[in-house]
Each structure stands twice: as C-alpha cells, then as structure tokens.
Length: 400
Ligand code: IPM
Ligand code: MG
Image 1 (cartoon, helix red, strand yellow):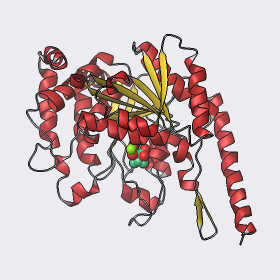
Image 2: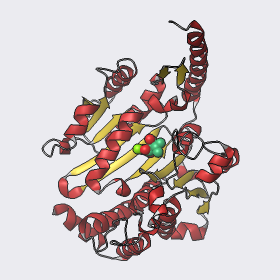
Image 3: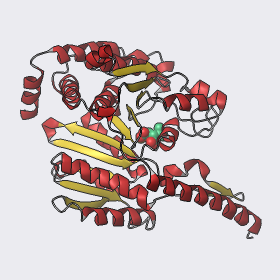
Image 4: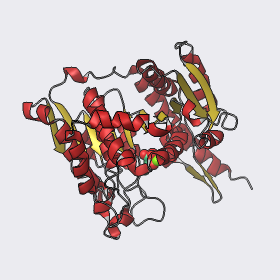
C-alpha cells in the first residue's frame, strides 16, 4: 500500500533541507577570501584535548608545539591556550555536537589543534548526537581536509584533498524514515563546493612542483553528485595545462594504493568526503597506521588540525591511554605550524617524525606496556629536534 501521508511528510522535510542548502551555497559564493596570518598578531592557537585518549596525546602535541614556537610565544607573536568543554560528557549533557559556549570560544581562535572526540552511534550509552568533528567542519566552513601520507623509503608521497563539508556528511543527521520500512539519506554535491576543493588541490600541486592531480569518484554508479564532481574537476583542470590529470573509481583506487608498481604514480588526489574518509585510512596504513597520520581541516577563515583516528575509549578502559601514539597529533601540529607560515620548522618536525617513527625506531609505540609511552616517545622526538644531524640523517633515510 502506498502511504501518501508519509511521502508528503518526507517531501516537506526534503524541501527544508534544500532551502538550507541553497542558503549555504549563497554563503560559499559570498565568503571572504583567505586570512593572511603574516598580518595577524597575536596568532591565537586553541588546544581542544577531546576525550578518550585525546587529552593524553594532546598534552604531548602541545608540548611539541610550544617547543617549536618558543620564540614567538615569548615575544607574544603567538598565543596558545586550552579550550575546555569539548568532551563527550559535556556534549551529551547539552545534547549538542558542540555546546554553544564552546563553539563561541573556538571562534575566538584562528587555528585549533584538536584531540579525538567520541562519535556516538545508535545504541551507544550517549545521545546520538552528530560527530563534533563533522559539526566543527560545517560550523567553521573547513571545506578542505588535507591529509598527507609519506613513506619516503618506498617512494610514497601522497597528499589527499578530501572535500569536508558535503557529500553524505552534509545531510548525515537529516535522513528521513518514511513509514515503517524505508530509511533514506541524502548525498550532496554543490558546484561552488566542488570548485573550491578542486581548485585548492590544483593550486597546491602548482605551488609545490607536483605534476599530477588525480580525482577519485564513483561517477559510474553515483551519477548525479559524483558526476558533477568529476565534471567540475575536468573543467578546472583546463586552467592548469602543465598539470597531468586522471581519474579513478574508488574501488579500483583502493586496490591501486596497494599495487607497488603503480602507487608511486599518485601525487595529489582530490575526492568527495566519504571516499576521502575511507581512502585516507587505507593510505595511512602504509605509513604505520592511522596513529601516525595527521589532518588539516582548512577553511578560508579558520583551520583545525587533528589526528585522523578516533578516541579509542577501549584503551582508556583498559588503562593503556598513556601508551597511545601521539604521532598523529604531532603530525597535525606540524601541519598547523606550516599553515601559519613557519614552513622550515614544520619540515624539521616532519623529518624528526619520519626518523623516530620509520627509520631509527629506537622507541616503538605498541599501544601497550610492551612499547614506549606517548611521553617517552615525545621526549625521544624532541631529542631529535635538538640533534644537529637531523637533516643529514633524514637525507640518508630517504636515499635508503
Ligand atoms: C575522520 C573520522 C570522522 C569522519 C568521524 C569520526 C566522524 O573518521 O576524520 O576521518 O568520518 O570524518
Ligand atoms: Mg575517517
């Protein structure tokens, strides 16, 4: 039997979603241009410790950040402070992905370094609130999720530009239950939304001497949204005639990353949100796992830097939180340092992370008492940052 009432209710709900998206598109079109950090003083950095293992690894990442920016902290050019309240307990108490006062506080900072935060799902002991990562990406319009993966010894040097505010994520909490038996979610791709992330990927390639940009979709099946993304990709590619382009479907792309003969060919990759979520977890595995990968969530006004993994509540329950790997968040800190203009220092930090995590490996993190604690690992890393042989050692590592 066709339940016309249920259909009409669903149509009305969809209408409201579309109204909101039309307003959003107008906002993207009218958005102010990129902030220029060289003109800002002090640059305000907020630390969001998160929950689960978050506070443990955030403390180590903050220590490294303060070490790297010591001069600017002393001179007052940079200011670092902790923002409280982004814990699952507080978010659950307010029944909000980000409580209003916390969001207001976050907006007072130019950039934030964020620890993992628990994302509830149906059936969890928490209210089923939206992921606070996702909410923050939307609220601050952090449309680019930039995730580098480098394994110099294997010739892997990828950088993923994952669209961060659209796709299945945009309307993820707003799916519709139609009658008893049908559940439907919506997938979104807007022209200005696709344009800005794809442009950013090409601009990055151009600025950094990369020669190829690859687009990842499933446009053969998901024809309307991924079809638009791919069409915008090839249109924008015309403005960058010196850069080679190709495109792959997500399924074969996941296979090609494992293909030792082909995977070195990929350089800059751009894709819609969900494919980027999946592909970047896979890619991080080559570098030593998601515990070693950082992410930059970048918008024109704000930026947030975080680990790509979750809050691992089980590690806390089992009393192992101090063994969590802080490398992911320290990689994120390196991206933050780079983003606010200290490129050489960011590179230095990345070299030290490569040496400690992939080359010398004097201390190894296993997530258990069989390995080093996050604090011990960070001390080891800071020793390398002080070592005059850092650059030379890294060059030796890369040459193999
Ligand atoms: C990520 C995470 C998040 C995402 C989760 C926690 C909502 O997996 O940052 O990749 O899916 O984007
Ligand atoms: Mg993910």
